[in-house]
Image (tube, rainbow, N blue to C red; front, side, top):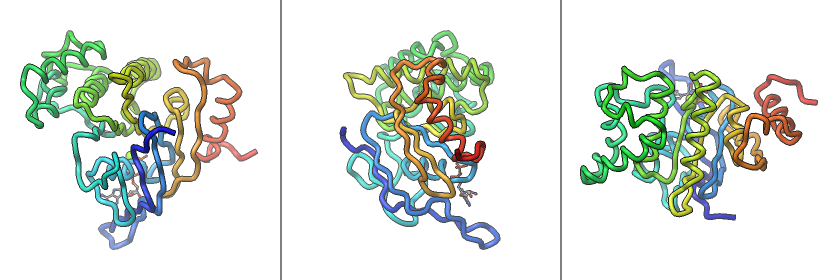
Length: 259
Ligand SMILES: Nc1ncnc2c1ncn2[C@@H]1O[C@H](COP(=O)(O)OP(=O)(O)OP(=O)(O)O)[C@@H](O)[C@H]1O
Ligand SMILES: [Mg+2]
């Protein structure tokens, strides 16, 4: 067992809707994630995935229980945690390189250092040639590459990715998986980042994850290790163990009757 990086204990979050009704987005969630793990979070729409990521990020406070990251209770956002949002992840009013540098400039990192970090990660995601472009000049897949470069450049060791590739075509998505996994696997000086990746796509979860956490109605209902060797090609999805996991996931999502 590695170090525990993220620990939720009896974590709850309720919302009061405008009509006065109470919505329990999370109910008594217990979850421990080891440093360096790549965890995918799956579950039907509205089951609390984004809420869980927002609590880890410190953007939303829990209404019950606790969230601890790096041994410290989360009380707000901080540079150790970086998030890529479900919707817009790039500032349209900043050029590509400025987007990648932005988090570092907020923290007062000297210009030369942040420019070097932006150049390095833009190169790693294959976008050096558009460093000076505006986001509106880029395709959807390129914008997601910018978001990946940004979250890595910011230096957080916990990466919270909320359906980052949801709207992309299959081929673009697979290319981005390779980009993301390569950056994750090289983990500077053997120090891999811990990743929480939300997706609706069960194939995506199986290609990416060390472990798949399944949520339903604000609770964790399953927790499946994915032991297949890396790097995984789409052929890995045909392994008997992967087919077994896929069946379990589809059953949880209500797409297949339990055998
Ligand atoms: N700010 C808010 N005010 C009121 N209710 C909210 C708020 N944010 C989330 N909720 C409710 O909490 C529940 C969980 O929402 P959440 O966004 O975490 O789900 P999700 O699993 O990310 O869904 P999706 O897959 O559609 O993104 C939903 O019922 C949602 O309507
Ligand atoms: Mg969501």
